[in-house]
Amino acid sequence: MIEPVYLAAPDRYEKMEYRRAGKSGIRLPLLSLGLWQNFGSHSPFQESKKILHYAFDRGICHFDLANNYGPEYGTAEETFGRVMASSFRPHRDELFISTKAGYDMWPGPYGNWGSRKYLTASLDQSLKRMNLDYVDIFYTHRMDPETPVEETMQALVDIVRQGKALYAGISRYSRERGLEAARYLAEHDVPCLLFQDRYNILDRNIREKGIIDMTVEENAGLVVFSPLQQGLLTGRYLNGIPKDSRMARNQSLKQSVLTPELTAALQGLDTLAQKRGQTLAQMSLSWLMHDPRVTSVIVGASSVAQLQDNLQAMACQAFSQEELAEIDRLSALHWIRQYP
Ligand SMILES: NC(=O)c1ccc[n+]([C@@H]2O[C@H](COP(=O)([O-])OP(=O)(O)OC[C@H]3O[C@@H](n4cnc5c(N)ncnc54)[C@H](OP(=O)(O)O)[C@@H]3O)[C@@H](O)[C@H]2O)c1
Image (cartoon, rainbow, N blue to C red; front, side):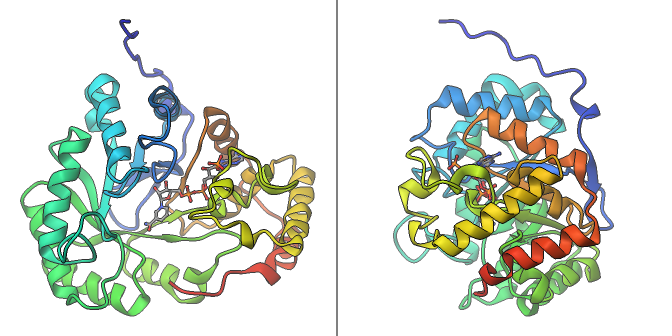
């Protein structure tokens, strides 16, 4: 069957707010789309493509990937590469595409963590899978406790110099190592312009550990992931565990976290969201957007309907002091304390 040609919505940039990353030329959509789950070989390609088209038609021009996104590893990049070839190619210069390396990808000593060898080989593989000549930003996906930070950062510097990435970023580094990394990059004229970390109503570690302050001090942008705590901060789990949900798979989101106490807290948050005229997902995203230090919120979605719901969060970013205090009161007992 011949597929209809994709024509991007002409008004796509009118619907989105863009925030500047620190003091840089990068301007990201306030809501970005992440392809960690739901875009790999286990998900129907046509549905993934629909979500990607829907996103771009609404001004989401930032897509967040990594070598190991899928499942299976690598297949989210392949899906993106297919959509790149079939639909997004004429729009390449409008897109801000990220990928990362830092978690286990292939066997042996060079398929994980932060060595120069792993990062360099991984990005070459990612570019092939995504049908790209370069990515817009390449991240070291996590801090490597053993490889010297200088080696990892020099790999990023060289990747930028080779034109395989336009910018370098850091994901999930402690404040101390993040500052060291940022200093190295700045001294080599490849400033770290984006820090990526987890932040949501239930997980405020980056605020408590000074990571958010660090992004401001470094004049960098802050891109936050798992804004819905993988779906917990939505209507998904208010009445049990739906069969088609991420928690039903019991992998990255464990069923054991859903205690009766947490369910009660989520129900309280849902009631507050309703009073604000929002869904719980929307309120959770608006809560992040309310913080001007957040450059972009990377959301995941398993359907167009979820993304449609999430996009409406932008319309209601203001919170009263009472609402903020009520969110703290309802969620405080469940704040995730481990870091990273
Ligand atoms: N740098 C890193 O180390 C790192 C780590 C994790 C993630 N990330 C990035 O951040 C992105 C987002 O992470 P995440 O997927 O954990 O984000 P999330 O937005 O917290 O969770 C996404 C999940 O929430 C559910 N959902 C989303 N919108 C919904 C709505 N309106 N109503 C009901 N349920 C809704 C869906 O679950 P169901 O699938 O159950 O429908 C969806 O798969 C990733 O794709 C990745 O790009 C980066």
